[in-house]
Image 1 (cartoon, helix red, strand yellow):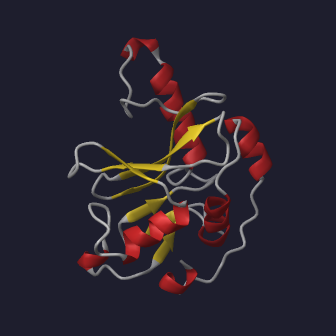
Image 2 (tube, helix red, strand yellow):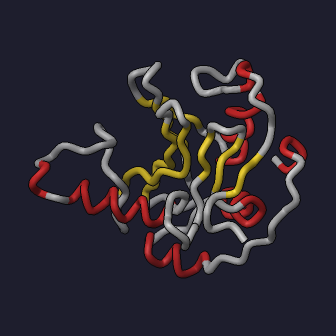
Image 3 (cartoon, helix red, strand yellow):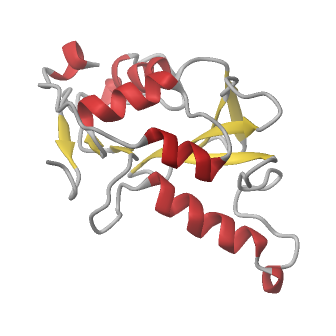
Length: 173
């Protein structure tokens, strides 16, 4: 990813242990490395990468996860979930945690199962597909394929020639 974007690593320090205690599971190692290098922000003017942005929160996956979990658990919405047929991950359970999206409303999640820590399949959905697509690959590989592989459909954006750059989010150092 560094070579693709020409990005100079930021070396962001994050208290991953505190975040993982709140979630009840460890996060993917490659995701943590990506965040420490890039921070939260936007790749190629269209792919939003969520991290731990303690600023206003636009790129803060933890804040968005908390809101999603609160809404998912709110009884006034009944059994309807924004990530149906799944649920938003709750500590100790099984569900989705969003880590990225696009300006075209594509969404990227990990399917986390507290009973299977270290296993992080990616579930992605797009309005073009109409359902969930599962990928058994790392976060970094998925993101790289989205950005650089024109044949990675329906999620690849390389065919649009948007360039390979990164713009840090609001809370970047």
